[in-house]
Amino acid sequence: VLLALNPFCTIRGLYGEAQMRKYADANTNGNSKLPPHVYQIAYASYKSMMRQLEDDATTSTANQSILVSGESGAGKTVTTKFVMKFLAALSQRGFSKSGGATTPKRAYLQVQEKRRLKSTTTEESTSTTSISTNSIEGQVLQSNPILEAFGNARTVRNDNSSRFGKFIEIQFQRQGKLVGASIDTYLLEKVRLVTQSAGERNYHV
Image 1 (cartoon, rainbow, N blue to C red):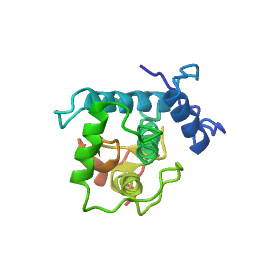
Image 2: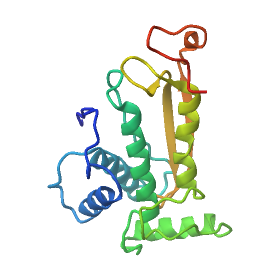
Image 3: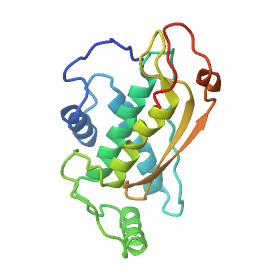
């Protein structure tokens, strides 16, 4: 469990590519001394998913869940974006830094994956956490502004308040590469279309 506060100001160095590399490298090298962070939660979920697939070569699924909850204005939407961006960066790095088949199970998984993907084209290099908007990772992340445009509005507590709930399913292949996502939306505040409280606005679009 991670408890996070919205400071309502920018804290430099708390998020970003440098921090993503730091937490990804620390977890890969077995260093658990870094402070608690949303990146740590995301990595733990990703690692558990990959371990389940490695431990059982016959299974095709390994589900993990991250629940983000809190009061209005607590930072749920922004935190979810950080989780998604970190998972996308991990996808580009790959779960194994060496990429080698260190166990029979991993060797089996790699052979099966090569057969399944032999007709596909490998995307960009995984040596950086920079995510191209043309990549699958980039396209998944770019879905956020579209949903916010039609489902977010200004309230007295938040200039970009989500007025709906969403369930985001991020899909990975066996070797940890992000291949897609699905998003289900719930409980859109329809009454906002015709009336708003004082100091509040309709949806952005």
